[in-house]
Image 1 (cartoon, rainbow, N blue to C red):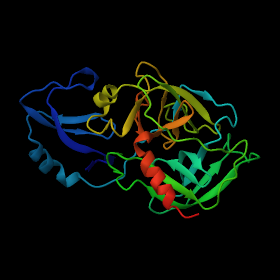
Image 2 (cartoon, rainbow, N blue to C red):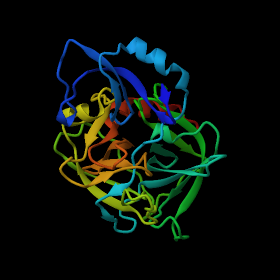
Image 3 (cartoon, rainbow, N blue to C red):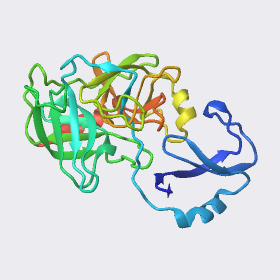
Image 4 (tube, helix red, strand yellow):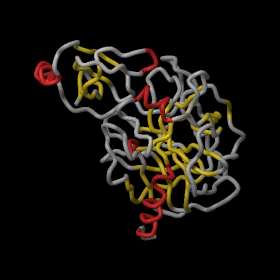
Length: 303
């Protein structure tokens, strides 16, 4: 359910929340409102959830979520064309202009991105082989999307199954600057240090601008408990990865959702969502969970 222009969710939480987002069990419960990043918005001690719903029902209305992750914070500019699988995805929107997302090429005609980047109406195009997306670089390939395939169980409210395949209208020509990245054949281990890249903002300042050049940052895969404490109950360990050490400033944030988390040369995650303040950790779609679905879908795609 939605409240006051933000995507909010109503659920029960214990009436006393301890530091770090952990909860103490108590007999008496209270109605509470949280947003999709797990932030505690407001609580009503001793008020039953049913009564809370009745009080808030007149002001509830549906809106799309607006806090997905993607900026590269605490990173550096990538070596030009060192990540040839990177895709700059542009989704046209009628009212608010184009939406930008990241993505990665897994086959000459297929790019993987986040399902929340999708818009029911609006053409999608993909720019491959780019380092600076604001200039006309030699070797880049701009290809329109012929078919978009979001995961059939994608949940736009909780961002579960946040993965989408984009079939390109024409096959990309594989070159020095345009290439594919392999899917994982096993799950990434906790503690692994991986890389994320994107063209998003590099700070959380209100006047921050999108980086025209590809940025990259190293991030550590954290234990599921770190994200369970911060994003409960939306974080699902079997389908999501917890990425980014809370003790460090490095993180991904808004702007380049859909980009890959690369571990040992393979795409292990997809940038999905995080907190509004840009703090780590962030939540990534766990690609290893969807390899079977991806391969099954690829076999069905017609050239």
